[in-house]
Length: 343
Ligand code: NAD
Ligand code: ZN
Ligand code: ZN
Image (cartoon, rainbow, N blue to C red):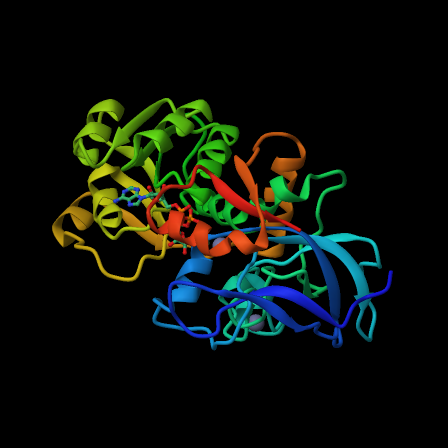
């Protein structure tokens, strides 16, 4: 295949509500890197945080967002690679890590201080081509539909890892708070892992989707107190709560929904703070932990659930030129499941 010298990409030129779709130079793969021709890329709410620059740790414009990219290797940089030209690979939030530090050596590579992040510290998948580090790039299961599998690369692996971190057993109650891109696959992973899934959101259409995907009980937190509703339904609170919502209110509500000795895992990353009642947390022995995407092993497992048909992202395809419109809809909570760019 002949590789062009320029490509179209969505570039965040400065922090703000929109990106510019424009022509930029094609990058050259360095050592351990591959050039990938994209077939699809999911659009994660993290991309919106990145473009708006609303997190304490910011990317440096100009940059190309996107960390749910799926495509084929077209060129390999110098060195040995475990992938070859033509292989289907992805990018991910965990674009690379140092491989040497305490976190890397002990299976916690997502917390490596030298980690690079796809679409944040490294240009991502909102363009016709991207670079990946072949030591870290996820391998896409054979025969997977690129548009459909893309959301597994961030939403899927993040909630799958989050659910593992919740230490909730089959048959126990698991609340998924926020049924967006992350949450709608979380419902499916939870069901596949044998949990009794309860979904909480502030939009009835999201809750309807959660029901279709296997949630046995749903609560609209806008109209009903989610703490009271979940305490009553579960007779004492959910064993696990996974918060994927994009509003700090949901983080405070997690404590009220949780059972004594239960575990709350935070995946969502809205800027801000939430009230945490010390007395309640201590007397009920509640664990609260954060969880950041997943390791390469978590990724392989999360993709395997997809390959075996246990989870199926609800995806709508769009074009690169639609990214600003998708961001606007995302801001307003108007997306069902995930939007995925088809190249
Ligand atoms: P999304 O926009 O697709 O979904 C967010 C959902 O939250 C929507 O369904 C919305 O209705 C719901 N919501 C809003 N306010 C709520 C409230 N008060 N209570 C309950 N639900 C509420 O976003 P997404 O792509 O699923 O991402 C969710 C968050 O997770 C973002 O902040 C993103 O940056 C973060 N994220 C974190 C990780 C990680 O590794 N921890 C990975 C990916 C994404
Ligand atoms: Zn993401
Ligand atoms: Zn490291």
